Image 1: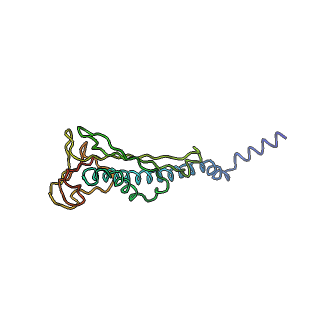
Image 2: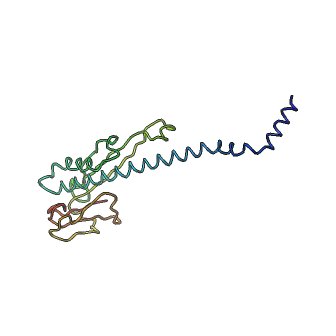
Image 3: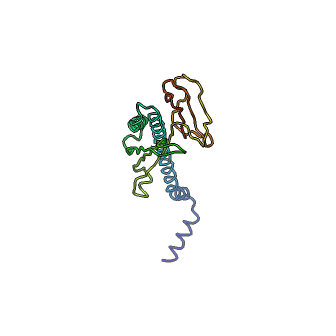
Amino acid sequence: MFELMFRLLQRLGRDGRGNSVLTIALGLPALIGATGFGIDTAQWYLWKSELQQAVDNAAVAGAEARADARTAQAYKVHAARAFGANLGLIKDIVSKPTIELNDYGKGRQNLVIVSATVSDRLLFSSLISRSATTVRAEASAIFGWSDHEASCLISRSPAARGAVLYRGGKLDFDGCGAASLSEGGESGGRVPQRIQG
């Protein structure tokens, strides 16, 4: 009996016909895992990108509203409207944005902060963690001038319409922002605008 088993194992060891099947069987879990991780990472990146654009635009809209005496108290409405207008894929899974004022530099209540989260189950990650994935984004924008920081980008035209237009993404001017001195439409009105990225 043992001799028969030994001969069978020897024959199996010399036979190379099943090697590719064994290699595929051992490599398949890694291939499926890498594919699933790639799909989840792409989905997470899309969520983060869209959420960041929505909070960026909401913060800028809130700061623009605060800079205009006619809309200063309605900054939350303007920020929430801009937030909602920038939602697409995540509109059904995004939280209500938190919109608040804070002090920046020597100013009082001159910083609009907007934050929100997206939470849902990702296809592959939920199989492993059995919980939802949460992505958070925050943006802030100030209005008026700050005494301790200069603007690196300044539109100096006194009447240009849309002298400084911000379309989302990240403003990074090595620690300083953008400003518009224009009184034209879509430029923030009489108070010089500064947008902190």
